[in-house]
Amino acid sequence: MSNLAFLSLIFTIFISTSNAISQCNGPCKTWDDCDGQLICINGKCNDDPNVGTKTCKSSPPSVPSPTPTNTCRPSGTVNCNGVHPIYRCSPPVTSSTPAQLTFNDFSRGGDGGGPSSCDGQYHDNNERIVALSTGWFAGRSRCGKMIRIRANNGKTVTAKVVDECDSTMGCDAEHAFQSPCKNNIVDGSIAVWRALGLDTNLGIVPVTWSMV
Image (cartoon, rainbow, N blue to C red; front, top):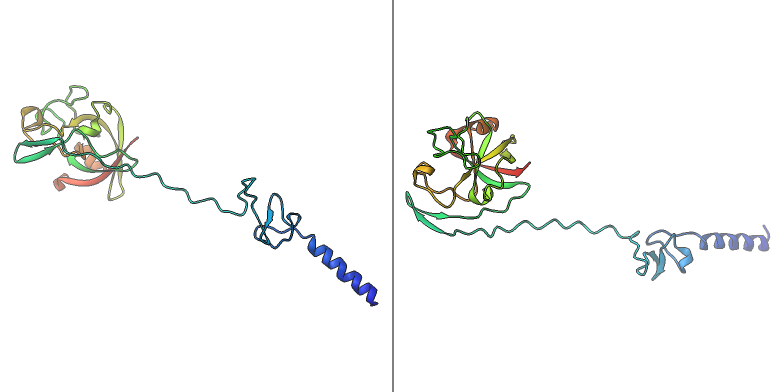
C-alpha cells in the first residue's frame, strides 16, 4: 500500500470516528458528538440543564407519604373501677390502622349494655359487626360503613360498624357498668372473632383495620 493510500485510510477512519454519536456520559468534543438533546459538558455527553431533560439521570426515588402523627391525648380521667383516662379522639385512620380487638355481645342482655348507637337495635352475634372507639366512630359518621380487619395470623374479615365503644363514659347501665373504652378499640361480635380464627378467651388481640 502506498503512503498516500495509507494516509487516506487513516483520515477516513478518523472522520468516521469523529462523527460517532455518543450516548449518556460518552466522550465528546462538541454538541454534534452527542445523541438527541444531549450536549457536551466537560468532555462527556449529558442532559441540557436549559432544556430540563433527564435522559442521563434516573428519576429520584419517590418520597413516601409521611405517617400521620398521633396527636390524640386524654381529655381527662374518670374514677370508674379505678382511674381511667377518657378520650374524645382516636389515632389517625390509615390503610392499616393498629387497633386492639375486643369481644362484645351485641344481643339484648349482653355485655354491650344498651342497644346499638347506630340504629337503636340489638343484634344477632352471628352478624359480622363491630363497635369503634369514640374517635373512630366519629359521631356516627361511620354507622353502617364496612371495615376490613386483619389479624396477625393473616386472616381478614369485613364487618359493619353498628355501635360506639364509648371512650368518654362508663360504669352505668348503658355501658353495662364497664370502664370507658380505650381509644384504639375495635369491639367485634363472636362472628368476627371466628372469621379471624381467634379464640374469644384471649380477651384482647392486636389487629389492624381500614375502611373498605
